[in-house]
Image (cartoon, rainbow, N blue to C red; front, side):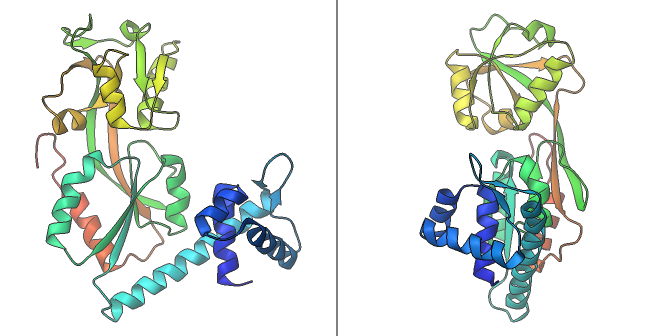
Length: 294
């Protein structure tokens, strides 16, 4: 087996779909199928179940972990050599659920270290632990708990989450509301797995309630616009209020001690971070995340 074979397997394993993997790799699907078949032949066992749809089997899942760690180590070595031989000033790979809270610290870091390249990737929290351990990324920023085995973390911000309503909503004049008072309200929210949706589901479930969801979206801007237009209400953190202070919606405190968001920076405990990544970690942790500061 060679590196090309392993890199192609890693993509197929991640997507569990041959045609999408072929598109991402810019190779023909029949050629990719032959590559996976050769790899399985060398290992002496199938790596995928092919009934109905392509799915990693237990052997494939086991092998995937080793492949991702090996590829991550090779990439880390390449970056370390480039840095040691002064082939540029280094690079950083950062993933986050969304980048709204990161625009200012990243802009300042860019101005302070203009020669450092960095790549940003939007990523669901469910992928973060695996991708960090595989060294696909240097850091992740999450707004919800991430399995911590093999990871280190630093809390960046703990902030209140409010209910946002249209200006003409019956609750708009209130200073605060309870979860019970929101039981029959239509919610515009993020898809399952995103922190806003998990918070909404958790707070309602503990009260024996089911949220009435009228729209799901991955676009924070679209959610805000739909709320403003009167289609429903939704949860939003104080960071969003600070970023657009004059946006025409009403903000109501939620009378619940756990209606909050905790923003954390995570990295692999075993990774050897290059100098550029260490500089960014220091800058992000040292940033004043207090609402209203810049």
